[in-house]
Length: 346
Image (cartoon, rainbow, N blue to C red):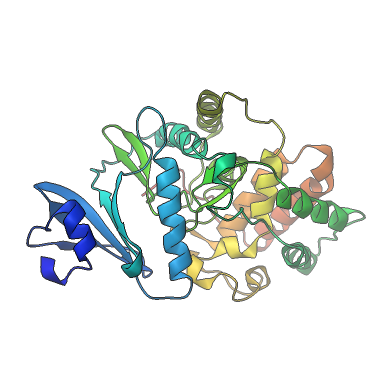
């Protein structure tokens, strides 16, 4: 166990926050960071340090900026309080929160908190965080190649339809504060409501890009879940209500189908962050399946195809809807033992 003197807790933090008590405890975290539970002036706190790695400085800057923006939330907080920072050491000191097991219908409170988080961003934050990045033309080609592998012709106009989708997502308006990975595990269910942690991938954009997580099953996360129709409807209504309350404007009806389709065609949304950008993961699927958290890659893809088949009923995506139906059927014919993704989070 490390002593308080061995913590990355510099003089500037000591002057502001006081001396950490003896006996800090190392907590579980991703390989990209080290996290400790510490005690400051008789109260628990969390110390997080981003370790030396590519893009570590950028991820640290994103997290600090996002926490400061989210700290403007009116009413109950949606993030832990940021108590102190040490940019030279990439250290944050945060309020410690007690997490309790989420209720069976946790997704409704989660959706409310997600909308409140998104609504803290505004035009004045432009430049403090990068814009959200959607799928690319390479994703379109990979997805259509996968369909052809299973004997599903793209048909006339499908490629143009998908390229137009990529263009719309790239131009999607909005200054919502997007978490970047708003997944089970990055949401703390406290006695005072849901709060989010780990903002290393935060950006600004349309909140629909993360509202779609409820339908497509948390595409950037190890913990895929699906909500039954009535529960999903309640959660999406809760999001829209909280968004309206936080911004004074209704959430646009258009765009959710685009967001779901965007996650479908991204092969990098089938693997954890460390493996993204390394290869064409859709091209791997016909020959191998791999587990990541609560579902395999093929399970994830089948689920997303079903979502897009049910959601993409607008004119811009009508050809993709047909392709999604056909490709889902082909995958289940090839692998009939594939099970639906789970309905409960671990």
